[in-house]
Each structure stands twice: as structure tokens, then as C-alpha cells.
Image (spheres, rainbow, N blue to C red):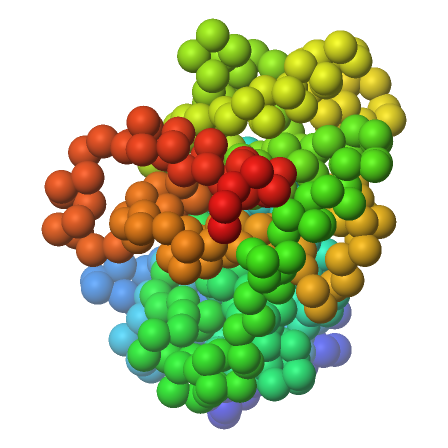
Length: 403
């Protein structure tokens, strides 16, 4: 035919009815078998061998299709590749099931499932979920965890960093934890785009520069005896819980969730297990004053469950706002004081009217003693001295002291 490539024509292919091998040039051949079936092959030389690759039957695979496939294989040959090996690898890849995309939302669900047992209550769990749903999922929830970049994190944080910084700071930390967890599970490698130190800190101002920390408002200690007296007219369980929290100087949640099996009436102390403590290094024993014991005896006469201060639902404690509502009912405004603020009131009272060592009142409040040296020396919980503090504090609250 006088041509080195594209030798055959469509009419020729239709009319050939003899068994044989007919070259179209460029390693492409039309093969006709004994039964006159026609199919295409790419036949070439590679390392002293003559591999053959089937390109499909004619006319399902047209002359144009066969030439296109042959051209692709010639390109591989020209680049010192082996077309047959290339075809085999391609077929293997097609047989592999597609890799499942693991999204940020998938990783978040996995992390939260493992992390929530360490959270203190359902409120914290809801906060985790709600912040992710509101701020994070709309941007990266359905993105492959491996594809999340710093630009995505900034897209989430920048709109709220200046106007809702406490929330934005928590959101950043939660994203960082989830991405770190995904690395542990093998879904991602490399740097965490939500990391603060040496990363986002170079782009966003430090929270302390744009957000003033607001501490719990605390009632001046001089006003406490009158306030405590005002609460005595309230016989509700919430009011008793409020008075108990004031007398023991514990956190609201510890008072609200207190159980009867943690009270030792004989030795006059209450043991808060370490998992209920903010700093979970050890359990905390609270000395009980006579005023505290009086409240417990009163509650014991009304006992309906293991919770000392039961709520309205069976086997449930008081709700989270019960003590605060009782405080408001006693006439204390939001600006004037909070339940948590009575811990500060005790601290100031102890500093200004007593000669208590700072470390002693810190232990009363179950705070960590600052400084490694001090911690090393304080191998005791100063229980007897703390009992003195609790007794004198109760006297002060009830107006029985000279202060």
C-alpha cells in the first residue's frame, strides 16, 4: 500500500474474509481466525520478546478506536516503557475498590465518642457538638481530612476571632484535637493546620490581646452574713444546696452532685472523688462544720435518692441553674455575685481578717499549690488546719464571729 502506518481502510477490513494477520502499521494488526472472527492486536518487540496486547474485537472496536489505542502504546514504547506491563497495572488499579474518603466530620465523631467519657457532664458534650455544627462543619465537615489546610482553619476562625474570641479559641482547640486524633488513627500525616504555637499565632492576635478575662463576680465578704441570713427564709432544696456550697466553699457542680455515700458523719467530712474534681490528681476531703452537718441532717430527713440535693426528676440532682436561681431569689444580682464567687469571698476574707497562709486557703479551695518547690514540700492536705478554717468560715457566715 506504500504507507508505513494507517495501511488499512474500512472497506478493506469489511471485505477481508481470509484467515490471517493484516498490518495497519505502527504495531497494529487485524487478526482473523479460523471462524473468520476479527479482532485487533498490538504486537511489538521488547527485550528480545514479542508481547501481544488485545485491543478488542472488530467491529465493536472500530479501526479509529484501535489506532487510538495503538498510538497510546507507541508513546509508552517511545518512553522506554513496556505497554503490556502498563496495561496490567492499569487493570489492577481499576479492580481495586476506591479508597473511602474520611471526612473531618467522620474524624470528629470518632474523637468525640472516645473523648466524651472524660467530660464532666452533658453540657460540655453539647457544647462540643454545637460549636462544631455551627462554626466548623459548614466549612470543612465534608472535606477529606487529608485535604484540610490552614486556609480552611482561618476561614472558620477569622469571622469570630475578634467578636467571639472565647468561643473561637475553644473552636480552634477542638479542631486541633480532632485533627491530631485523625493522625493517631492513620488518616492523616504532617503538621496540624489548627496548631497555635508557631503557626496560627503568627497570623491571629493572641486572645489576651483582644479579650479581657472576666472573673466570676464575688460578693464582698462584709456583705455575706446578711446574705446568708436572707437565704434562711427559703426552705427549698436549692436554697439548702446554696447554703451548703457557701459553707463548704466548693464549686457549684460538686455541691449539686454530692451523694450520700460520700459523707462520713462520724468523722465529719465529705470526700469528693477525683474524677469530679477540676484538677483530677486526687480526691478532695472537705471538713464539715456543724452548720454544714445541720443542712445534711435536714436533707437526710427528706432523702429520696443517693443525691443529697435531689431534683424534680427521679434519681436526678438539682439542675445546673438551681443554686444560682436561689441566690438571685435572695436578692443578689448578676453584677453583685455568683455562686462560684463565694470561693473568692472566702479567699479575700481569709487574707484580710485572718492570718491564714495562702497555701492553706488554696488547699481549702482545692487549688494546685503554685510552684514545684512548694508542691514538693506540701505532702499533706493540712486537713486539721482546713477544719479550723471551715469552722471559722461557718461562724462568720452565720454572723457568730467577731469579724
